[in-house]
Amino acid sequence: MHPQNPEEVPVMRFTVAAIALASLLFGQAAPAPTLKGVQKIYIEKTPNDLDQYIQAEIAKKLKGRLTVVLKAEDADAIMTGVGEHKTGTGAAVTGRMLGLHDTATAAVSIVDKSRQTILWTSEAGDRSLLFGVFTRGGPRKVASRLVKSLNKALEQ
Image 1 (cartoon, rainbow, N blue to C red):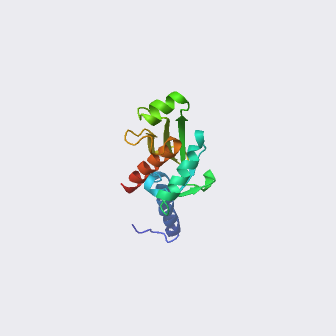
Image 2 (cartoon, one colour; image 1 turned 90 degrees about the vertical axis):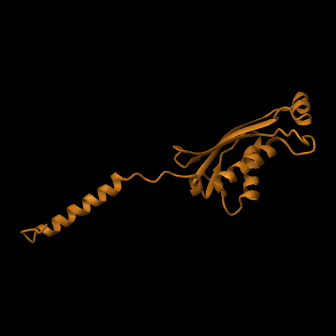
Image 3 (cartoon, rainbow, N blue to C red; image 1 turned 45 degrees about the horizontal axis):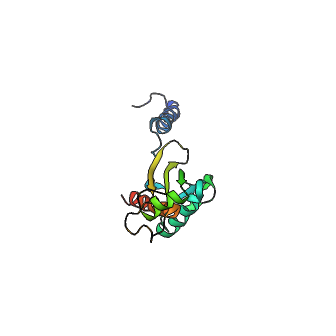
């Protein structure tokens, strides 16, 4: 299309640029966050210091792949969760010695920074049928299993 009046050329260029900008801003949504895109993670406080055990396990098993940051605003994603740790003689006998029940359990989720999308979720317990008395248990075992599951999800 050729303008008949040379003064119309700047107006046409402005209109084309405005349409292109509008299509970029409104026509395409930002790409959805993914677990593989997460490099820095903030871990919220959890009961029984599970968050501390998870931090230690991430440092051991995911060193170089995932960094734990101390402020939520510095993170790409946030880990939230709940946990439970049963104590007492009954829990020790049936859970720890016989391996029949979990004495510690947890469920965690990793959400994007805006807390709008769940990127990953998992749950774990510390039950160990074989060699239950001789292996570590409680929140440490739960954290180890959760980070192992997270590592598998990151590799997929």
